[in-house]
Image 1 (cartoon, helix red, strand yellow):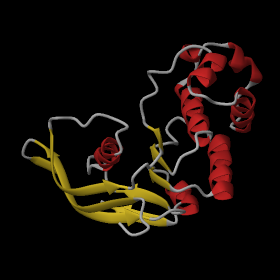
Image 2 (cartoon, rainbow, N blue to C red; image 1 turned 60 degrees about the horizontal axis):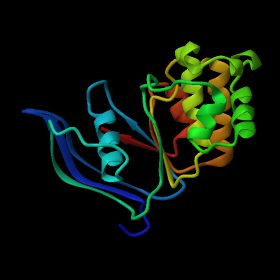
Image 3 (tube, rainbow, N blue to C red; image 1 turned 180 degrees about the horizontal axis):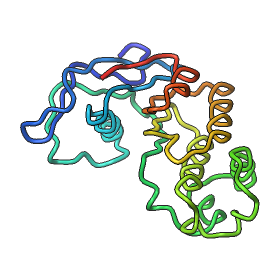
Image 4 (tube, rainbow, N blue to C red; image 1 turned 45 degrees about the vertical axis):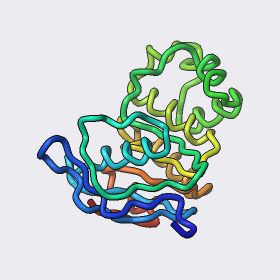
Length: 196
């Protein structure tokens, strides 16, 4: 893998006889902000989940067949933001404690993402989908990791918050692999585009 932290070589995957990923190859080096692009149903989320499984972060769906290689660097720490926010519950203080996040710093980032102070007093279950997504993104940004994997991070996110996320990513330049349909965001953030 040389100095790559992730290498995918001739990877194909599918459900039964339906192949959704076909012969995908790429590698990621530290410092790249890479965006996976392709039409809906081409396997972007499946590819992210395969990488996460290889890293031990999630279980691989047994109904998915695959061939080819997916390798991750030994000891690779991943911070993942998926599309599902249904597991979020409780209050902000409990959430930060559970995820080992500095409460003050977390709240500061949430305020930068246009989070109103009154929201901090509510349980997360009462939040809108956009507010829940902000929780996931702030949590990810505060998690020390070798690579940040985000699957459609701008779903439900307002324009002002999107600009703040762009600003944070351009300032810190983390190693990232993400899927996002917002073309302007991709053009501003991605240092590399991987087409599926």
